[in-house]
Image 1 (cartoon, rainbow, N blue to C red):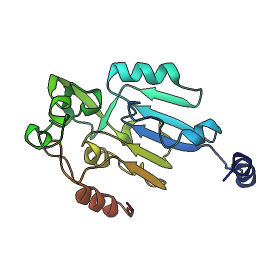
Image 2 (cartoon, rainbow, N blue to C red):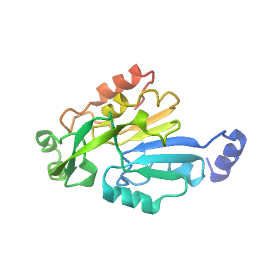
Image 3 (tube, rainbow, N blue to C red):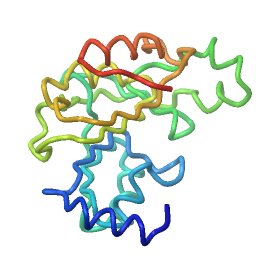
Image 4 (cartoon, helix red, strand yellow):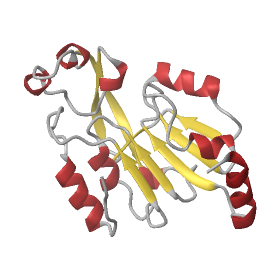
Amino acid sequence: MTDATRSQLALLLRPEHLTRVVDIGANPIDGDPPYKPLLARRLCRVVGFEAQPEALARLDAAKSDLETYLPHAIADGQRRTLHVCAASGMTSLLEPDPHVLSHFPGLAEWGRVLERREIDTVALSAVPEIDGIEMLKMDLQGGERAVLDGAGDTLAEAVCIQLDVSFVPLYKGQATYGEMDLALRARGGSSRT
């Protein structure tokens, strides 16, 4: 589809509001987010969350007027331990499993915990900046299940949920692909790979 066709489609559809995107774990380490084309065409509004101050600063420095980034750790609203790892992309509310990580080149070092910080998490259903969600992106290094536990009915209008999930649990207590599939289906959704 060409850019001209996309623009014509947007005009034809004339959405009543901008698509509401929520990005939990918005750390910009993996390139552009999947909603970047929507942002470029001013078709969505993003509320993103990043608990790591350095990553949050990078997001804030590059954001548009359609993006809001908050320093909350989204989970189930409980006090938890943030495991700050050698590689920013491995930092998690769950503890990395050194035995499992040792089977993957480089991951044991990346997942080495440098610091443990007690932090308060916020339930997705308790965030006033969210007035609905059509697209939810989660990349929480194993913490996705806790987000669902604290979501309440905020996902009732979601048409797309993209999450980073593993077939092999890299963190202690991490929900596997199959467990996340069942959790999403129990909420009334279906998953496709």
